[in-house]
Length: 218
Image (cartoon, rainbow, N blue to C red):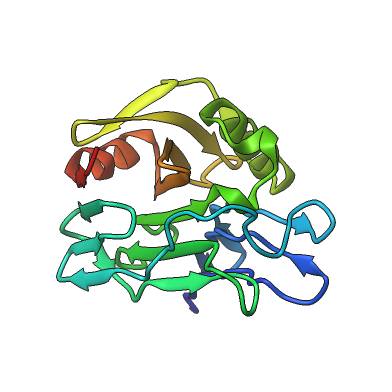
């Protein structure tokens, strides 16, 4: 019996700028695969290779135990105890300001079960089309992107809180036994702050959300 846990991220490159925050958490036992994905792609003609206005510059931030701190966006969050934070990454066009900073927190891979996870990314909205520079527009894009990956947008709460901070919320499922994903989006000082929570079902995801502590500078 083989079990794989894979996390795949698309990077910027070539003539296509891929604005990537794609999480694929796959637990494979024989022919059983549970995956959760959020991906973003842009043609170079649609999105400039560098911001057109001056503003903040994203930094990688630091990990201290279960806590991630990023002073460039004024954010600090602590994951659920069962999740382990990885190394933060910066992504962006070569020679330009970073477009995205992302960090993963993953739980233990278990046979025939969706791996619990929290993914955070911050995206500089100066790279984004105008239609995605509002919370509503960004959420609409999330629905379209996940549907392209085969996920179904399910009815649920339209807003949610991480700690005391309010976010727009979307929930997704992928087939029977495919796990549950909740996407939280907040536009803050020209940056999209996005959290993706995955688990075996809605209850498991909500427990991870409730266990996540967040501090955000106004």
